[in-house]
Figure 1 (cartoon, rainbow, N blue to C red):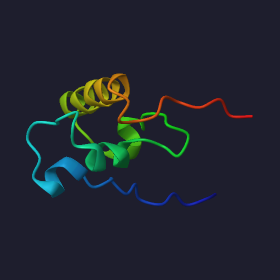
Figure 2: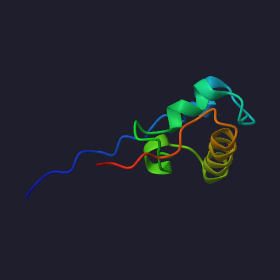
Figure 3: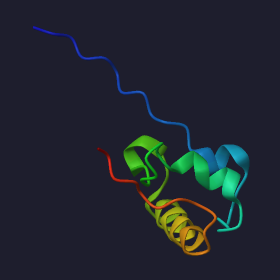
Length: 76
């Protein structure tokens, strides 16, 4: 039988940086939650709480609307 590795929880980036409210104008912070193709990373990957993930997703969408961040690109 194969032994399972203990699950390594991701560090909460917002708690580490001391961010309470996510702002759509803070592009350097939001880029950490976007993949190289421009997709929003999931909670499993980012280690955020559901409320924080919602704040980040909304901020990313607002920043995209203001042309500060890219929309997801077509992977071909």
